[in-house]
Amino acid sequence: MANVLQNVQTFPRTKVKLNSQRKKIGILGGTFNPIHNGHLIIAEQVFDQLGLDEIRFMPDSTPPHVDQKLAIDAFDRVNMINGAIRGNSHFVIEMEEIARGGVSYTYDTMLKLKRNHPNNDYYFIIGGDMVEYLPKWHKIKELSKLVTFVGVKREGFKRDGKYPIIWVDVPYIDISSTLIRSKIRARNSIRYLVPEFVERYIKEKHLYEG
Image (cartoon, rainbow, N blue to C red; front, top):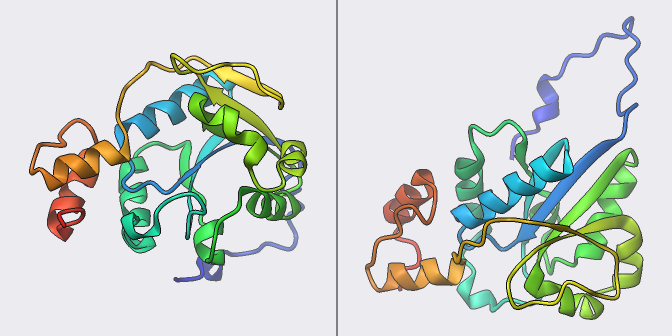
């Protein structure tokens, strides 16, 4: 991976205070296997309703709670994310977990991000169905001090939990990566379920067909 800092010029005579202002950063983590329009809608709504500075899509390297046999290579997942968010200036990709490799625990990732960027306030986005599982997350007490949890409301799931959560109303769209993979295996259309770039990429690479 090319070092993007190699081409950055510095100007010693110009005094600029980097990171002098706090930034509100949303984190949408997951396997993104593949990324779909539901992810993008959630990210845009959270960004808008909470007045964030940006949303970072953070793919995991080796998800601790997902069958690894079903997750395609991180290279392809990253490519699809980059293609899906292209054109949205406040969407970026966060490569911390991919770069670190191994099993991705949210606590370890957010601890490093906070240490590297102490002026960032992180808003970690989770689905309403995940709220009841928060007590089982790795080092959840410590994690809750590093981030503010943002819950995406879903019908049929409780909105109260042990840890503070900011709830955001997002149009309910029943799209999942599991649904998309099953449609591909059945040779059904995934048009309008994923961005056009992702649809083309999947077809060209023959992903999820087996």
